[in-house]
Amino acid sequence: MGTLALFCLSIAIIWAFVGAWLILPFAGLEVGLLLFLTWLVSKSTYQRQIVLLSPQYISLQKGYGKRLQGYLFEYSQSYLITYEPRHPEDTLELLLRDNCKSVPVAEFLNLEDQQLFIKLLQKEGVKLHKVKPSIAIDC
Image 1: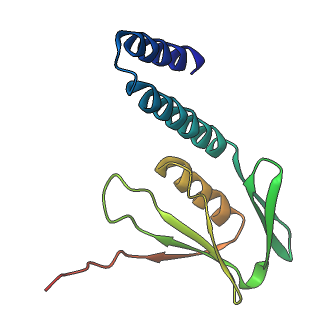
Image 2 (image 1 turned 45 degrees about the vertical axis):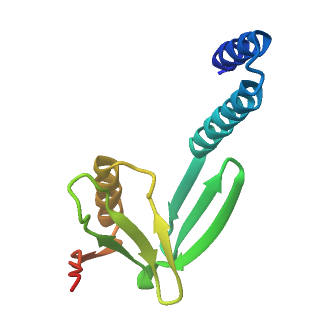
């Protein structure tokens, strides 16, 4: 990223010496935006979700890095809701739910990993509710 930023800024400085000094602020904005978007993508790679199963509870911890939010579900009242994708290239929408709360899970996984996650939870005895996508018709 530094090499790309240096390359872009060096071209802008050359143009500024030629007399097109107005290019400098835009080159700075371009480099700043590039670094900001790189930081956002890098941050999203540290997203974590930890699901712990015990005979009484399902514990879900989710967040970025070490800052995790915790959710506790009563095992006997919990189930996993799957919303089928509306488009063939979409992933599933998964919600872990009990009588009190509903929390999205595995939203950053690809379709194959989501299906593996569902199979693992079913193997452990978590109930599954499948919801077909509804079709919206505009009049």
